[in-house]
Image (cartoon, rainbow, N blue to C red; front, side, top):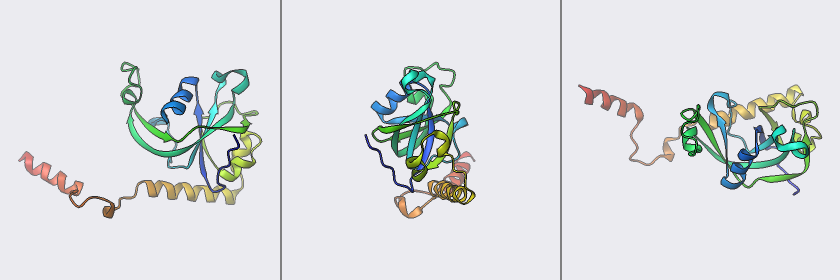
Length: 185
């Protein structure tokens, strides 16, 4: 598939550790990131999936797939993977990233010398021109500043509180807190 991302797209390169996680993203439309190791900003446009050695000789150590991000929420691992209620991290918080259809890249982006990757940001422009994962790294100072400002704007926008968007019946949390204190008297 010929996948063309907008040049201005903000992309999070994320590790895809095994086939099960790929199947979850492909079939159920979500990807998980542990809160404790999550990047600072997850309000991006696309996820690019870096495949580990678990994908075998033909697909390991490369980015072969990308998906548009549709939204995200914070939940616990036990609520994401219900067949593992006794998992050691069952009670830990995870971001559940909702993704659109997984798109296979016509030309996968190989890791080259890079093998251990967790998360990093890039742009659609860098992504379209990349021959290796090293090409995804934004090196020019002016481009890094643009990326930094974009990430900062996304983080602020994700945390904005817009009272006009809430129904009229919503009560300010500070008032509820005061009412709780009064109720305890």
